Amino acid sequence: MEHVEIARAESERGELVLRERRPGPDDAGAPTALELRANGVFVMDTREVATEQALATAALAVVDDPRAVAVGGLGLGFTMHQVLADSRVETCAVVEVEQALVDWMRDGTIAHGPALLADARVSVVVADIAVAVAEARPASYDLLLLDVDNGPGYLVHDANAVLYEAPFLRSVRAMLRPGGAVAVWSAAEAPDLERSLASVFTTTRSERHDVRLQERDEHYWLYVGVV
Image (tube, rainbow, N blue to C red; front, side, top):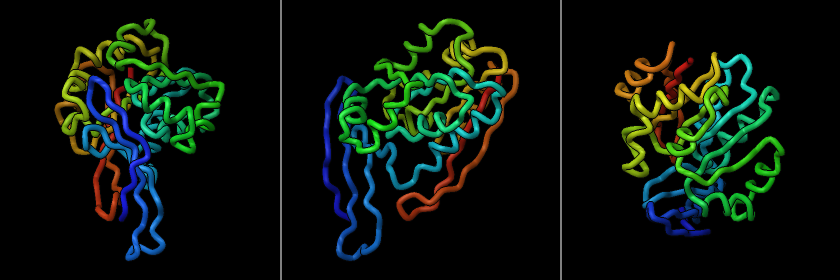
């Protein structure tokens, strides 16, 4: 495969790179894919989006009336897109810490970005998700989807470790309405996260998802906590 850099940005957290994987002479018929990396770590691509979609679907399924949804992490927009596919959703607030990523989605550097952000239900806030949750009004959301890392065992930034611990999860619970839920995506089993969720939320559950990613069999996990 040939890798072609599309965009690059630097922030206080390091380097963010958007690149395109293009099939080489020996990969005839293979699809072109857009790939996002943070400090050299693979975050996501446009070829395998099932886990981003599953995060939204699993969370929406456990909330009876998900009118107000928050998404922690914009990524390439596929979690947000799946949320907006649910007609019950009236507002979707996306919190993304990297201004450059938001700009790439808005200006078409990520080709599908402008159409997704044109949905009138969407608002994008450039902020740290921990700060945004701390500042949220109590009982103001029905659902939070957290997808800012590859899970607690594969942090994009070390500072994100606090997002998987009980103090932050208690702040999440405070921003959720009765019957609301939080859903967390992880690249591997995360028993410590499961225990933290169980210490804060009324009910919890975990789901394993098997996917094929870049010619490899992978197993991803979703962790859900319900108020």
